[in-house]
Length: 173
Image (cartoon, rainbow, N blue to C red):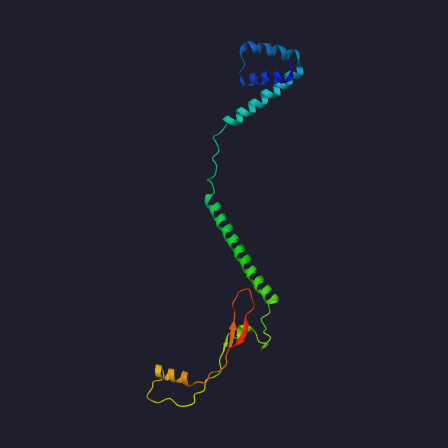
């Protein structure tokens, strides 16, 4: 008899699933082979221990599933991911401004001043004659007279016609 078939027969005997005539034949075989009888004893002992473990006491209850803890962990994880994303965007913006300042300096050759400070420069307007006392301070007539009498002064303008080019400063035309 091969060892695999013998082991299956021993397991059937230990579980009590063997017909009586087969059990008599197996007992006769085990009497003549003491090493197989020792193996059969260890299988019967393992089956008995398994029966005791499965039948003794009540079934153990499992703790409740920690769903709220998992939700809280997911919320915390989401907050950290959003914080990292915002920090990445902020770092990209800072690097973009830094690269722009390094490769496109804002100093202009005409004035030596930065272009952002020269958006529109107008000199103080001088009135050549007094406007009558009867016109109110905020009156339209007073404003029309002031504009008509004011000498035209040359102004400096900032011309920025493309977001990818450096702005140019020009005099009024």
